[in-house]
Image 1: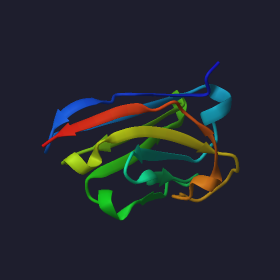
Image 2: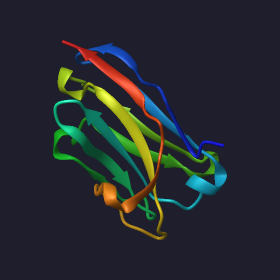
Image 3: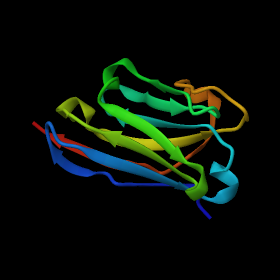
Image 4: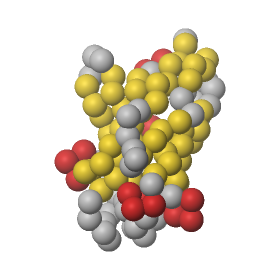
Amino acid sequence: QVPLVESGGGSVQAGGSLRLTCAASRDTSSRRCMGWFRLKPEKGREAVAGIGSSGSTKYADFVKGRFTISQDSTKNTVYLQMNSLSFEDTGMYYCAARRSWPCTSSLDEGDYSTWGQGTQVTVSS
């Protein structure tokens, strides 16, 4: 069974919104701090947002005020609400789970041990 499965990606025009969902098997997401990352061919993988065990959140500067990470522990699901999308947001988006608990929100990919297979987001200008 795949531990993390992302969905919700797609094509959208600049200024539009998407909500990404990361569904986890119970033993992966339950009591795990989660994060979202994206892969851009010209930049490599970069952190987008993280959520800690207390519900604290952390965002990359380039998404502050536009993206919101949230977690529904009862559904073992993490969301990334993305608003005011721009062409620069195009990329493959991955969710990831940290191995430690409790933990703070983190944008360091080295803190994450489990990764999904990604969902593509394409924003047309």
